[in-house]
Image (tube, rainbow, N blue to C red):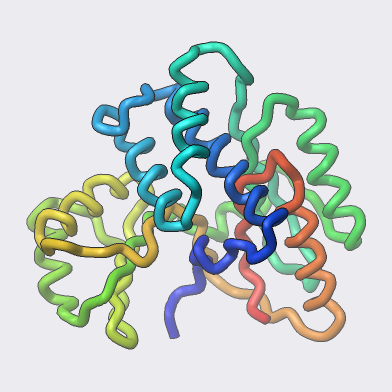
Length: 238
Protein backbone atom coordinates (compact mmCIF):
# COMPACT_ATOMS: atom_id res chain seq x y z
CA UNK A 1 0.00 0.00 0.00
CA UNK A 2 1.49 3.31 -1.05
CA UNK A 3 1.58 6.40 1.10
CA UNK A 4 -1.55 8.51 0.90
CA UNK A 5 -0.97 11.65 -1.11
CA UNK A 6 -3.02 13.58 -3.61
CA UNK A 7 -1.92 13.91 -7.19
CA UNK A 8 -2.95 17.40 -8.21
CA UNK A 9 -3.58 16.25 -11.78
CA UNK A 10 -6.37 13.98 -10.56
CA UNK A 11 -8.26 16.99 -9.23
CA UNK A 12 -8.26 18.88 -12.52
CA UNK A 13 -11.91 19.50 -13.22
CA UNK A 14 -13.72 18.51 -16.40
CA UNK A 15 -16.13 21.41 -16.78
CA UNK A 16 -15.08 24.72 -18.33
CA UNK A 17 -16.11 26.64 -15.22
CA UNK A 18 -14.10 24.40 -12.90
CA UNK A 19 -11.09 24.48 -15.24
CA UNK A 20 -11.13 28.26 -15.14
CA UNK A 21 -10.90 28.07 -11.33
CA UNK A 22 -7.85 25.82 -11.62
CA UNK A 23 -6.25 28.21 -14.12
CA UNK A 24 -6.99 31.11 -11.79
CA UNK A 25 -5.30 29.35 -8.87
CA UNK A 26 -2.20 28.67 -10.96
CA UNK A 27 -2.18 32.22 -12.27
CA UNK A 28 -2.29 33.64 -8.76
CA UNK A 29 0.46 31.33 -7.51
CA UNK A 30 2.72 32.09 -10.50
CA UNK A 31 2.19 35.82 -9.97
CA UNK A 32 3.10 35.59 -6.27
CA UNK A 33 6.21 33.44 -6.84
CA UNK A 34 7.38 35.62 -9.76
CA UNK A 35 6.80 38.85 -7.86
CA UNK A 36 8.75 37.67 -4.82
CA UNK A 37 11.61 35.83 -6.55
CA UNK A 38 11.81 37.33 -10.04
CA UNK A 39 9.91 36.62 -13.24
CA UNK A 40 12.80 34.80 -14.95
CA UNK A 41 12.32 31.02 -14.54
CA UNK A 42 16.06 30.45 -15.09
CA UNK A 43 16.84 32.48 -11.99
CA UNK A 44 13.82 31.50 -9.92
CA UNK A 45 13.74 27.75 -9.31
CA UNK A 46 10.38 27.89 -7.53
CA UNK A 47 8.86 29.65 -10.52
CA UNK A 48 10.40 27.21 -12.99
CA UNK A 49 9.00 24.21 -11.12
CA UNK A 50 5.59 25.85 -10.86
CA UNK A 51 5.45 26.64 -14.58
CA UNK A 52 6.43 23.06 -15.41
CA UNK A 53 3.59 21.76 -13.23
CA UNK A 54 1.17 24.20 -14.83
CA UNK A 55 2.11 22.93 -18.30
CA UNK A 56 1.61 19.33 -17.21
CA UNK A 57 -1.80 20.25 -15.85
CA UNK A 58 -2.62 21.78 -19.25
CA UNK A 59 -2.85 25.37 -18.07
CA UNK A 60 -2.93 27.56 -21.21
CA UNK A 61 0.25 29.47 -22.01
CA UNK A 62 -1.58 32.81 -22.00
CA UNK A 63 -2.52 32.28 -18.34
CA UNK A 64 1.15 31.80 -17.42
CA UNK A 65 2.31 34.73 -19.57
CA UNK A 66 -0.32 37.07 -18.15
CA UNK A 67 0.74 36.25 -14.58
CA UNK A 68 4.41 36.82 -15.44
CA UNK A 69 3.73 40.15 -17.14
CA UNK A 70 1.66 41.24 -14.16
CA UNK A 71 4.54 40.37 -11.81
CA UNK A 72 7.04 42.25 -13.98
CA UNK A 73 4.86 45.34 -13.74
CA UNK A 74 5.52 45.51 -10.03
CA UNK A 75 2.10 46.87 -9.10
CA UNK A 76 -0.98 44.81 -8.41
CA UNK A 77 -2.39 42.77 -5.56
CA UNK A 78 -0.29 41.97 -2.54
CA UNK A 79 -1.09 38.34 -1.78
CA UNK A 80 0.23 36.54 1.27
CA UNK A 81 0.03 32.87 2.28
CA UNK A 82 -2.49 31.78 4.91
CA UNK A 83 -2.95 28.28 6.34
CA UNK A 84 -5.98 27.01 8.20
CA UNK A 85 -6.33 23.69 10.01
CA UNK A 86 -9.13 21.71 11.56
CA UNK A 87 -11.27 18.61 11.56
CA UNK A 88 -13.68 17.79 8.75
CA UNK A 89 -16.58 15.34 8.46
CA UNK A 90 -15.80 11.97 10.02
CA UNK A 91 -13.23 13.72 12.24
CA UNK A 92 -10.60 13.62 9.47
CA UNK A 93 -7.76 16.14 9.66
CA UNK A 94 -7.72 18.98 7.13
CA UNK A 95 -5.17 21.60 6.05
CA UNK A 96 -6.25 24.48 3.81
CA UNK A 97 -3.54 26.54 2.08
CA UNK A 98 -4.55 29.94 0.72
CA UNK A 99 -3.14 33.01 -1.00
CA UNK A 100 -5.03 36.10 0.07
CA UNK A 101 -5.07 39.87 -0.22
CA UNK A 102 -7.72 40.09 2.51
CA UNK A 103 -7.17 37.67 5.44
CA UNK A 104 -10.45 38.64 7.13
CA UNK A 105 -12.42 37.72 4.02
CA UNK A 106 -10.51 34.49 3.53
CA UNK A 107 -10.84 33.15 7.05
CA UNK A 108 -14.54 34.06 6.94
CA UNK A 109 -15.03 32.10 3.72
CA UNK A 110 -13.08 29.10 5.03
CA UNK A 111 -14.89 29.15 8.38
CA UNK A 112 -18.23 29.17 6.58
CA UNK A 113 -17.25 25.96 4.74
CA UNK A 114 -16.40 24.30 8.04
CA UNK A 115 -19.61 25.51 9.69
CA UNK A 116 -21.89 24.36 6.88
CA UNK A 117 -20.89 20.73 7.40
CA UNK A 118 -20.61 21.06 11.20
CA UNK A 119 -16.83 20.66 11.01
CA UNK A 120 -14.38 22.32 13.41
CA UNK A 121 -11.86 24.98 12.41
CA UNK A 122 -8.87 24.90 14.76
CA UNK A 123 -5.87 27.09 15.43
CA UNK A 124 -2.44 27.00 13.81
CA UNK A 125 -0.74 23.68 14.53
CA UNK A 126 -3.96 21.85 15.37
CA UNK A 127 -3.32 19.05 12.86
CA UNK A 128 -0.24 20.00 10.79
CA UNK A 129 2.03 18.15 13.22
CA UNK A 130 0.34 14.96 11.99
CA UNK A 131 1.42 15.60 8.38
CA UNK A 132 4.83 15.50 6.71
CA UNK A 133 5.63 18.43 4.40
CA UNK A 134 7.09 16.45 1.50
CA UNK A 135 8.54 16.86 -1.92
CA UNK A 136 7.03 14.12 -4.09
CA UNK A 137 8.51 13.04 -7.42
CA UNK A 138 6.98 10.08 -9.26
CA UNK A 139 8.00 8.64 -12.62
CA UNK A 140 8.02 5.41 -14.63
CA UNK A 141 10.74 2.98 -13.60
CA UNK A 142 11.60 -0.08 -11.56
CA UNK A 143 15.27 0.31 -10.63
CA UNK A 144 14.88 1.57 -7.09
CA UNK A 145 18.57 1.03 -6.29
CA UNK A 146 19.72 3.24 -9.17
CA UNK A 147 17.37 6.00 -8.08
CA UNK A 148 18.56 5.82 -4.49
CA UNK A 149 22.21 5.85 -5.62
CA UNK A 150 21.63 8.98 -7.75
CA UNK A 151 19.98 10.78 -4.86
CA UNK A 152 22.59 9.73 -2.31
CA UNK A 153 25.40 10.80 -4.66
CA UNK A 154 23.79 14.25 -4.85
CA UNK A 155 23.54 14.30 -1.04
CA UNK A 156 19.73 14.40 -1.08
CA UNK A 157 18.02 13.64 2.22
CA UNK A 158 15.55 10.97 1.07
CA UNK A 159 12.60 10.16 3.33
CA UNK A 160 11.23 7.17 1.40
CA UNK A 161 11.19 5.51 -2.02
CA UNK A 162 8.29 3.39 -3.27
CA UNK A 163 8.36 1.04 -6.25
CA UNK A 164 4.87 -0.03 -7.28
CA UNK A 165 3.38 -1.13 -10.60
CA UNK A 166 6.27 0.18 -12.68
CA UNK A 167 6.31 3.58 -11.01
CA UNK A 168 8.86 4.91 -8.57
CA UNK A 169 7.86 7.58 -6.09
CA UNK A 170 10.45 9.55 -4.17
CA UNK A 171 9.58 11.31 -0.92
CA UNK A 172 11.94 13.92 0.53
CA UNK A 173 11.67 16.88 2.90
CA UNK A 174 10.14 19.86 1.10
CA UNK A 175 13.44 21.73 1.50
CA UNK A 176 15.13 19.07 -0.69
CA UNK A 177 12.72 19.45 -3.63
CA UNK A 178 15.01 21.28 -6.07
CA UNK A 179 18.08 19.23 -5.21
CA UNK A 180 16.16 15.95 -5.61
CA UNK A 181 14.60 16.96 -8.91
CA UNK A 182 17.91 18.15 -10.34
CA UNK A 183 19.67 14.95 -9.26
CA UNK A 184 17.06 12.76 -10.95
CA UNK A 185 16.97 14.90 -14.09
CA UNK A 186 20.75 14.68 -14.47
CA UNK A 187 20.92 10.95 -13.69
CA UNK A 188 18.08 9.78 -15.93
CA UNK A 189 17.93 11.39 -19.36
CA UNK A 190 14.44 12.17 -20.59
CA UNK A 191 12.80 11.52 -17.22
CA UNK A 192 9.13 12.51 -17.19
CA UNK A 193 7.66 13.25 -13.77
CA UNK A 194 4.07 12.06 -13.41
CA UNK A 195 3.93 13.73 -10.01
CA UNK A 196 6.07 16.78 -9.28
CA UNK A 197 4.85 18.56 -6.18
CA UNK A 198 5.29 19.67 -2.61
CA UNK A 199 2.42 18.42 -0.48
CA UNK A 200 1.33 17.63 3.05
CA UNK A 201 1.27 13.85 3.44
CA UNK A 202 -0.64 12.46 6.44
CA UNK A 203 1.25 10.23 8.87
CA UNK A 204 -1.97 8.30 9.57
CA UNK A 205 -5.36 8.03 7.86
CA UNK A 206 -8.88 8.32 9.25
CA UNK A 207 -11.55 5.98 7.80
CA UNK A 208 -14.62 7.91 6.63
CA UNK A 209 -17.84 6.06 5.81
CA UNK A 210 -21.62 6.40 5.60
CA UNK A 211 -23.12 9.88 5.52
CA UNK A 212 -19.72 11.39 6.32
CA UNK A 213 -18.47 10.52 2.83
CA UNK A 214 -21.05 12.73 1.10
CA UNK A 215 -20.47 15.47 3.66
CA UNK A 216 -16.71 15.34 3.13
CA UNK A 217 -17.07 15.52 -0.66
CA UNK A 218 -19.41 18.52 -0.25
CA UNK A 219 -16.93 20.11 2.16
CA UNK A 220 -13.96 19.68 -0.21
CA UNK A 221 -15.99 21.04 -3.14
CA UNK A 222 -16.94 24.12 -1.12
CA UNK A 223 -13.35 24.77 -0.10
CA UNK A 224 -12.08 24.40 -3.67
CA UNK A 225 -14.73 26.90 -4.80
CA UNK A 226 -13.27 29.58 -2.51
CA UNK A 227 -11.17 31.85 -4.72
CA UNK A 228 -8.39 32.27 -2.15
CA UNK A 229 -7.94 28.53 -1.53
CA UNK A 230 -4.98 27.06 -3.40
CA UNK A 231 -4.75 23.52 -2.00
CA UNK A 232 -6.60 21.29 0.44
CA UNK A 233 -4.99 18.30 2.17
CA UNK A 234 -6.70 15.73 4.36
CA UNK A 235 -6.09 12.30 5.87
CA UNK A 236 -9.50 10.80 5.09
CA UNK A 237 -9.59 7.26 3.75
CA UNK A 238 -12.86 6.64 1.94
